Length: 206
Image (tube, rainbow, N blue to C red):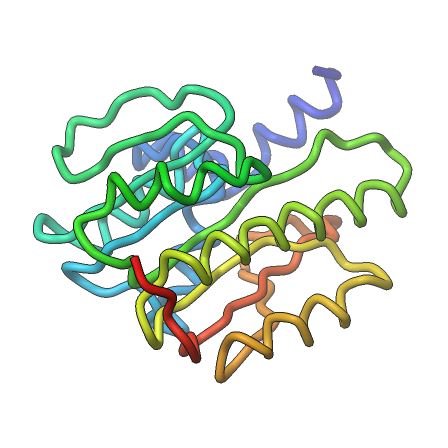
């Protein structure tokens, strides 16, 4: 980590707020802000978080669902345990076709919302990184459409670029509404956007 990067992080409002409020990452506020506007996670919901490490979105989702819901975090890396009994984790790769069955075995019923904050290993070549991010979002969309209930929601990170419009249109095939969101907590220089699919049109049998 460079000295400049550390200095910028230490000046970051949401990084400091996350430290104060006990969130594992500043990304928690992106989810909380998006949900404040669109209410796609509600009390007692079943939520699956893809690319969940280190667990900031899991903490935010747990806050939103309360004691009677359930959150499952999935990541290729192990995630530190949580004190809440209704938060569980699973080690797995979103690109692995078998992960869908592994997730289904954990869920008490079809999910209300699937989240995805997966990022590729950044190469520094923008076209490559953008393409990899869309591929990860597409793999996560496949999982979401396989485990969501009818009218469920899908919230995923994407990078701006020339492949974005086609992916938005792809999501529109599955959801009644697709919104492009840039939460306030997103860093100013970041090319991140989030897509929110609302109202899954067809639910697959679980």
